[in-house]
Image 1: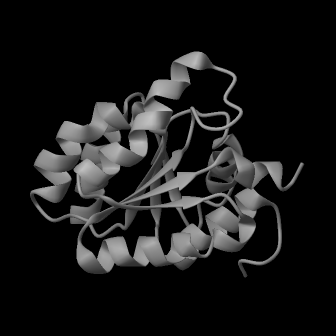
Image 2 (image 1 turned 45 degrees about the vertical axis):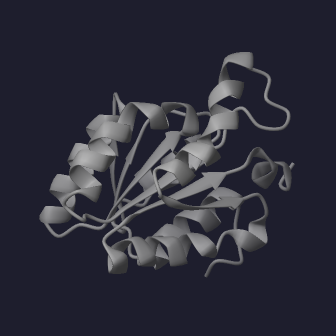
Length: 171
């Protein structure tokens, strides 16, 4: 089922195939299509809108304790807001969480304020020992399913960076 449809459709299909059934998100231009599809497919996946990234960590933890398989969608620029909650709650209590981030501040970024966190996100994930992958091509989208399943089976935090080039393929 992961071969057809728009990039956004294929990403949502990959989340569902990875058994993610609850997604918390913050507004993001790059992720807007994914969020819209999730909202339209509430029979397969529940969506909760957030006001802050760390709020999503708490909601995801509670949802996991209630039997859900959560993910959070955010910009990488907001990742810093969630670090304490990720480490002191999710990691400490060994709760699974998939974090899917739009990678702002990379090649072709038009907003200069996004560049510092864009440069820092990979070294930051490595310093926090959070396993991650970068997806820049449609052919790499199936790794979302694997990362979602691995987060659940390993009770760990896993991160996926969605690169702008991914959507450039459709243009």
